[in-house]
Amino acid sequence: MKAGRVIGILLLAALVTGVVFGVASVMGQRTKAQDLQASLDPFYTPPSPLPTDPGTVIRVEPLTFDDSMFTVEGGTAYRMLYVSARPDGTTAASGAMVFVPDVPAPEGGRKVVAWAHGTVGMGVACAPSRNPNGTEDMAGWLEQMMSLGWVVVATDYVGLGTPGVELYLVAEAEVSDVVNSVRAIRNWGEADAGSSYAVYGHSQGGHTSLWAGHLAEQIAPELDLIAVAAAAPAAELPEIVGAQWDTAVGWVIGPEATIAWSAMNPDLPIEGVITGAGIDNTERLADECIAPAALEGLLRDGLGGQYYTIDPMDSPPWANVVREQTPDPLPADMPVMVAQGTADQVVLAWPNALLQKEWCAAGSTLTMLWMGEIDHLAAAKTAGPQVVTWLSELFDGKPATAACNGPIPVPLPSDTGQ
Image (cartoon, rainbow, N blue to C red; front, side):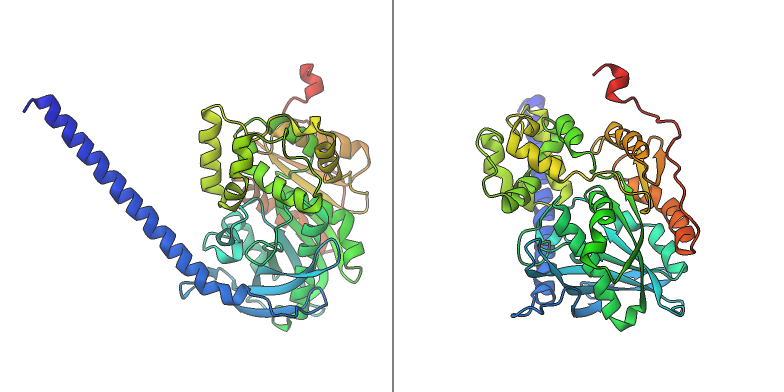
């Protein structure tokens, strides 16, 4: 047998062996993940009928995965199932993580930080409180908050890991879930939570956080929202959509937005706006967690495939939804911090530079934190320590001041002639 043929057979054998072991490994991991989710299902199954008061605690248990307790330095971690409300007023259940400091609670109760997570995918296993990696964006700053004696509650959002559709990038729904998570831990005596709270969010959750500055008081007037902070927020949605609709990002964000916005707007046109391949894969891709969805998006984009047929902003019904979900500048009495990395390829830097310019001009009490060469994945962890310092001063009663007129480190479209 010729040497070249032998080498070819050996290479093919190695390749087949590698594929077999690779598939076996993936299947083994998937089976393990499915077993984990099946074991968690009873906790996340809400009672029928559901309690009627938003903020009602259904059940709480230690945050464990496969009988291993999740640990956080300086505190104890729990998972919670609680009652929230849909935009139409109907009640629904949401999961959450709760982190209670070891230090004693002060008189009047602990300060509260409500964490709003970024895009993770709509599948059951993607819900942070059902995922062993659900605290990745909280590394570092969560431990700081424990040391300061703050209780942290991190909603999954209704429909993510619980029955129903997650209303992704629907401000009224997501803010309701965040605010009702604060109500819930106030109703759970173990947290010793006070009425003063702040919201911190990343990406999708940054959108939620900024909207909380507008909507939280009308949802829960008995609570005192002192400030909102957002890392790489999906805020200037028309600009983000216009820049990313025909990129890999369209394959990752598009399916979730399509499902959620169609649920709220049944007449939203699909044909002519989304490609055939996009329509065929919307539900499957939305159900994927973020890492495999992003990999597939990159592959499809590399092969020339697009999720959208046209820029959704060129479709009046889509453009109306996008604009409706874009937060206006916050009033001066709501302190806000926005952190943005200059290397972000998902929520691009220039739309949030535009936010800085517009919100400062409108009189918002905005602290703008620019993070050089920080990408999207690292935004919340990198900004977290400075968010903690900023919130600590506000919780201590120090007056908020705007810090938004510094230099903008990225060009705006007007600067480049676009």
